[in-house]
Amino acid sequence: MKLLKNCILIDGLSQEPVDDAYVVIDGDTIAAVGRGAYPSTAAEVIDCQGAYVLPGLIDTHVHLIWNGSSHPQSLIAGADPETVTLYAYRHALQTLSLGITSVRDLASPFKTVLQLRNAINANLLVGPTIVASGPSISMTGGHIHYIGVEADGEDEVRKAARQLLKQGADVIKVMATGGIYTNGEEPGSVQMTLSELKAAREEAAKKNKKTAAHAQGLQGIVNCLDAGIETIEHGIYADRDALHRMKAQDAYLVPTMIVFRNLASDSGIPAWAHKKVQHVLEPHRSMLEQAVSLQVKIATGTDCGSPATPPRFYFDELVIMQEAGMTPMEVIHASTRVAAACIDLHDRGTIEAGKKADLLIVRSNPLDDLHALREDKQVMKDGRLVSGKLLLL
Image 1 (cartoon, rainbow, N blue to C red):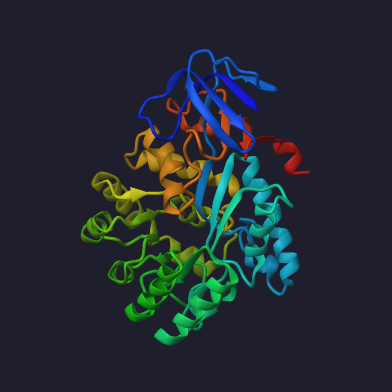
Image 2 (cartoon, rainbow, N blue to C red):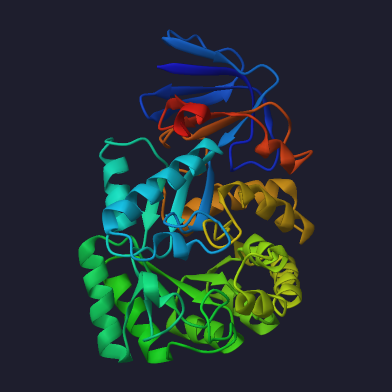
């Protein structure tokens, strides 16, 4: 048993922090949460006097196989799956050291991240909780087809989705539109048809799984909503009507703002990608501001690992969300409770009895300044304190 006492608690549920709180942890699970003194016989007592305790952070859109360099695919192109898996584990440890205790990985080749997830779940490795799609599904030659499976027509997409689910995918990832980081295509172009998107979503639903869609152009976003897809990734050109539909359908928006800002300012990325990204910055910013004002469900996701965006840029995404009109508490909720619901981690994301003990202990108030979450902190994963320095040796 562990007791965290004298906490200022940001539990992921309440609108205000709770002073003089305690958290009791039994093994990997939160056993009790309350205020005041707790008559504990806990073997370990952590005095959090003056510190803020909040749920572990969640990133709902990452690529663990990539390292966030200017052209990360070039570092793994041609590598065998075992080597790619080791790269992914290295990046997973970096992510955990930052206080990001759960991630959803949305496209990785072969079974690389699926196997990493399995090893962490079996307690063979220390790492963040991973929800993984395995390879994404794209049209032949479509967006980042080199780390996905290519499928054309409803029947091929349906079979591809079934095969991925058989391999253990937690979510199906589809490439509904073009994007920045594949040459010869545009973010606004439709790449998968409505019937193909419906087929993928139907197969995921048969296994009680969600579908996540890379969807940047407006028509592609509308197609995804017509298909009933639950999470819209990026959403760059979503207009007011599309955002209203997201809200009405209870769909999640995962904006991934920081990756595009970084791409626009990194001279090391391929010239064709640098040219494309300049055109999306303003519509992307405007879209997020509208989504916030309309109270669309927004879950924090960064695309970390993608070009120019290593894991440390997670915290920049939080600041951008605040700049778009979210309060600091809304940003924290988007990064904990809402993110957990988005990726179906129903045992995480809040600090309450029965949830897994993924916690952060930070010294400054993140409600005054979200930059406090960047600072040195104690990270607890499944009830155990983990050392950031040890993780990165």
